[in-house]
Structures are given as structure tokens and as C-alpha cells.
Image 1 (cartoon, one colour):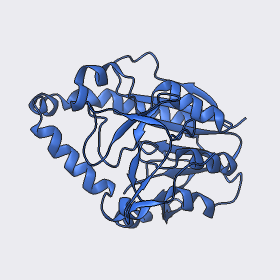
Image 2 (cartoon, helix red, strand yellow; image 1 turned 30 degrees about the vertical axis):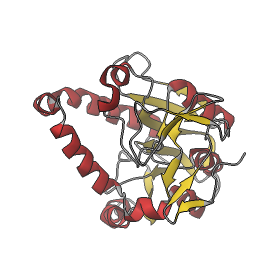
Image 3 (cartoon, rainbow, N blue to C red; image 1 turned 90 degrees about the horizontal axis):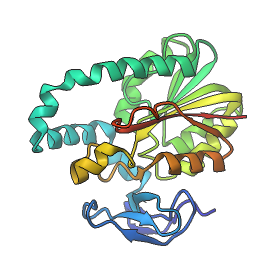
Amino acid sequence: MNVIVRAALTPNVVERPCEICGSPHSDILTRDAAAPWPLVRCSQCSFVYLQKVPTYAALAADFPWEVTFTAEKQRRSKSRLGWLDAATRWRTYPGHALDRYRRRHVLGLTGNVLDVGCGGSCRVPAGPIPFGVEISSALATQAAPAFAARGGSVVHASAVDGIDTFADSFFSAILMRSYLEHEIQPRLVLQKAFRKLASGGKVFVRVPDYGSVNRRVAGKHWCGFRFPDHVNYFTGRSLRRLAESTGFTYRRINWLSPLDDNIIAILTRP
């Protein structure tokens, strides 16, 4: 399957087909699109994604997480409900605690664990040896001491290149928290992750849920929209299809949370 069309539209932008089924045919979602980044729906499988995306070099130089996060925070504060969001941030605390519990339960207390898109800190719970891959030079440098203190290291590279620096079957678990929505080649990354996991190894995935009730209610103001660094808009159905087509078994662990903006799932290598 052709995972990405390599011909550049400009030096910093490429166009890609659907990452779920490989179809190049799609329809623009004018209601949710943000120029110059067309949000499209695959004509074959209905997956929603950005068809034109920044190259890895552009993501690292022009759209690093630390820049886009700040821009998104400012956008939300100026939205019509920004004051309400700021005044009720306490509502997120139970979710953060539950997220930490889930990560510890899935990633375990021993072994080697890889955090893909690790950002500027070590999010791997105490116990296993942590390793990271981070495309932002500044964040990779910032995170490196925390990983080194526990016997691990951080690779400054795109996930596609960084994962290849590790031996096959090296990891007992892989963390992909708030990462896969940014990846312009998610199929290729999951294929590589499959090889780097030992048998029975697990991938912890957390991505925005395009099928959520909140997205349907909020419309274009939904918190999951971030252009152009969120390039994939998964639903439970599309994420399952991608995971199973790359060899993993799929289990969603927050399906009882209809108002959750995210999908939290465990992908297991048989």
C-alpha cells in the first residue's frame, strides 16, 4: 500500500492518500476545513484526515508541539466558551489521574518502554527503562536528562526514522499518547512498532475521537481540531481497522465515556 505520495506540492508540503485504506479519492469537508489545510473524508472508508500535510522537516522547524500548543491555548482562551474552560479546569484532574493509572497498568513495572513523541519530559511511569523519540530538537534536549537518569535515552528524529534505531523485539511496551494524530504515516509507524515489540507487547494509544459527542456538539470549535499538526481524525472504527490491518489486536478501554474527547486503546502484538 502506498502510504504517502512523495511529490511535494511546495518544498514543505506533501499530499497523501487515505492511511486506512490507501484510496486517493476524498471529499473536502468545507464545514470543518481550515485554509490552506483541506480536511477531507475518504470516499472509500470515510476516514477523516488532512490531505495536504507539512513534511517532517516543516513539522520540526515550523510546527513543533511547544509552538502549536501555545497557539492552541491562546485560541481557546479567545473562543466564546474560553472563560468557562479556564474557570473549570478542575474538571480535568480526575481524568489526568485516571490516565496515569492506565499508563502504569499497561506499561508495567519492568522491561524497556518507548515513548513515541515524548515531548519535553519522561511520561513513562517509574519501573521500566524509558526510551523516547521526539521530532522537536528543543524538546528532545529538554527530555534527555530525565531518560538518562533511569538508564534510557531520547532519539531526536521523526518516529519513522527514530524507531528504526532500536533492535527488533526490544520493547515490552510502547507509549503513543497524544502522538498518532500528528503522524503523517501512522500505518508505517505501527508496522515498525509491531517489529520492535516483544511477543505480547502492548501499545498504549490516546488520540482525539472525531466520533465523540463533544465534537458533534462543538463543531468547528472542538478542541481536537489543530491545523496543521493534527493530521489524522480517528474514530474508534478507523483506529481499530488501522491497528488490526498492521497485525495488532485492538481493545478500547474508555468506551463507557461517551463525553470523552479521546479514544484510549490498547494494541497488543500477539
